[in-house]
Length: 220
Image (cartoon, rainbow, N blue to C red):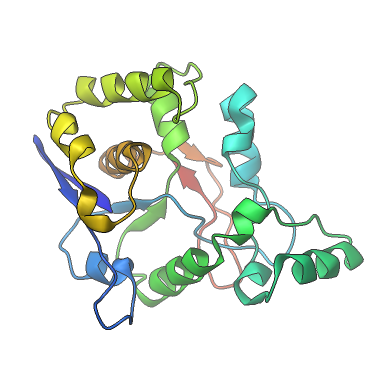
């Protein structure tokens, strides 16, 4: 799923898996015309240790720090199981990988393969929680699955010009499994892509890169 902003127009898109089971929704993204895009997935994976951008994201989120995962590393892409991976990491003196992060293994591989194959496209990593916090004047935002959190996120998006949220949130969403908070997060990603600024990126200044040359930064 993606949201596209073109001037005053906001459009909800469904990037579905190809019918033949090959490829990924990212292939549909590549087929689209866009100036820049933001993805809510790690781009740029270190061999070891934590990424500076994740540490800084947790610091900026404050009491909501747990909403930013730590531990995305290249070894996750080839691991057979979380237990096996964590055993190897422990023996190497490395921090382990959470179940939530390991469950993203397939998507991590898809994103890594896509951005490495299409470096000419301006696709960057962003984080919806950082976007919403910024839209909220830098103040923490309640949990997105709580009524208060959903209500505030909707208001922040409506203040930014989103006018079709009622329709978007009541669609059957074509069997994609998308939840209301997924749609709101996609709206936040579109805002990040529209508003990329050197003042809203972690870390600022020097751009750390992984061994494949991909930047390890989070925009918001």
